Length: 511
Image (cartoon, rainbow, N blue to C red):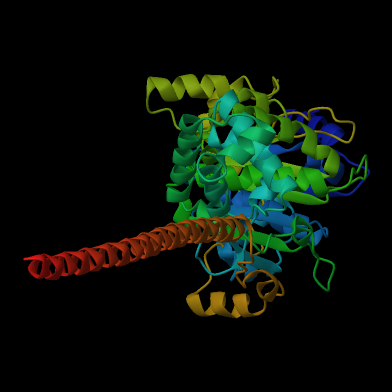
């Protein structure tokens, strides 16, 4: 038996699957692509999460595109984070190319150009279906972790949520949260201290500063209504293909706090609302997180713990998470250990640090009798990758250096006119793009404060009127007393004058 035949048997033995599957490409050995050695990923293990890693320009985005297309064809909805702005072309068919035909001839898979159903979403002011969530939906625990507050400050946030629940004050956006925090140490201080305990002004000030920091990254656009229903990510088109939802994030690359806040809230909402799936044989939704290091950049320890917990638990809801990044070391060990599918594109060894990273990366893959993993990692070409997956029984498959199939859709972006046409076809725009600003905590408290101030002003004015009235009454009383005295004096003076006059006359007669 030839070495290549032994390798073919080795691959086919573990990559054969009885259930439905995706074909990534064909395995390579001794510099050749083994046409019949297809690398297949069972659908039932795609909720076990995954990693697509590699240096810039090695084909990570195209691998993401291939996976998204094939999932869509299987009727599985997909959510993509488009941070670089180069994924919109999935909505248009590939124009084809001789190199694509040559690649697919080597792989042994026919190439067919196709477009796919795409929904464009937006977290900011870019065109697309607007994604929003309310402060109440976050809850005090998640919000505290996002803000990275102390235990004492987290307790205050919990009190604020309780006070708002008890007094029917909807917490919808950051404006509401800031107003309640200010109210708790000013106009409402006595009320909150009486019912919930003392609230420190220093602590609320610190929380407010963290909220302002979040606002500066554009979070005020994200918090509010109408809240996005995550069930709308699980739609299929009229032909039964899963909708590929693309979130346009090109303008938030320098705002990692907003990105991690959004991602954590989205994953928490999915975990909280999706039903348990058990062993359904296929995922309900697959999420690809491009430039995944942004999720972990500047994340607090508490936030990291939350992310790791969700990654561990969310697969039971039939949701697969796929992290796309340059180096596996960008992903924390606690998350990396949860990933079933690993697609590792080439790494470059320019520095001692790079060589160390390659050594660590190689240790994350199964030992192979057919490859020197460290050597292969630096010699892979564009569109080639080391693949390790889970078979139907959940066991790691043999490591396979794979020539990957090409995307069926366009490997470029849509033109502005094509984007406009796609946006007009959206079934969700009318549902989510109207901004709602109903009465919430801010308006209710402002009205309450204004009413209290008006009543206080009324009471002060009443006291002033009573004081003036009393003063005027006192003046009139003094005036009346003065008039009576004057009359008496006049009378006395008049009598005295009369007596003096009479005595004068009498005196003259006596003389």
